[in-house]
Length: 56
Length: 256
Image (tube, rainbow over all chains, first blue to last red; front, side, top):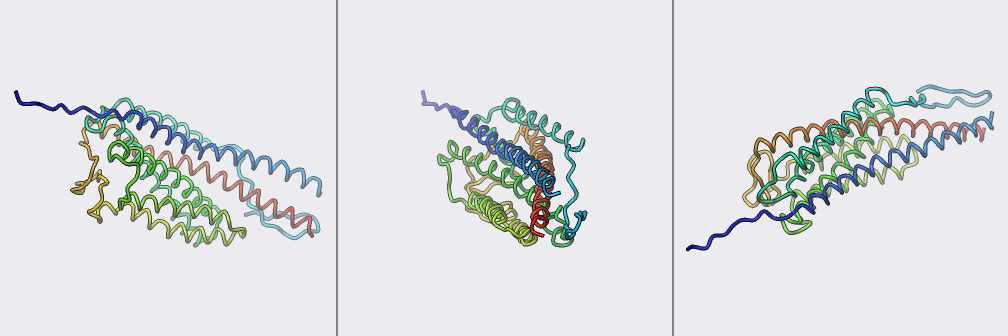
């Protein structure tokens, strides 16, 4: 009987989920930076309103 | 631009106050984008069949390639914003340009890192100095430098003019990354549309279900994701400009 070889699909699921986590991390960081910058701007605006009222 | 005046003070140019609530069209686009991304991920991660040669990691391809096209869209918007800013000197075009660069950089990082993660089990290495990988890395570094240099400039007019010119020139790295696998035969990066080079490693057969999972993801990551993110970022930039102008006006008033 000739020896036969069977191809086995490699187990690469861990790399898939690592990739998905990286995608979520990068896009999450971008969106989180929008929120933090918007929040910082709101604080700046409140301070500007107070300072402008004091100046007036 | 609207001019505001205070008694006994010089006239100061302050941009019109940006709308406080997001427009309805942006909300709708954001909801459609979020639902579409979830649907696209479902198609890529669960619906399409497993590649017998590469296993589960091949599913990253359904985001890897579309994210590059999304970066292309965003960096292209930066070119349009730059050209229009140089023509009109309207800061709103500068807002489009910087939004395009930020979103494009995020998407090109997704492209680069998912490629590297895919390469580890398929090429048995995280990274090789292949022409395609090298040009993609240069592209990312070029746009990262754009953001760093832009952030270091104090004068708004100089910053916008510099950003416009840099953003237009930097697009050459995007074109190079796009075409390099067709002009350099020594790449091992597979070509998706058209025949791959002889030494390409990690190619796969595109079946009908591959196309069903890939085409929606291309539309989602090339059109919906960049435009939704850029729109939000443009609104943020308009607010940044408005706050900066108000700060400058207040300082002028206090000094006068």
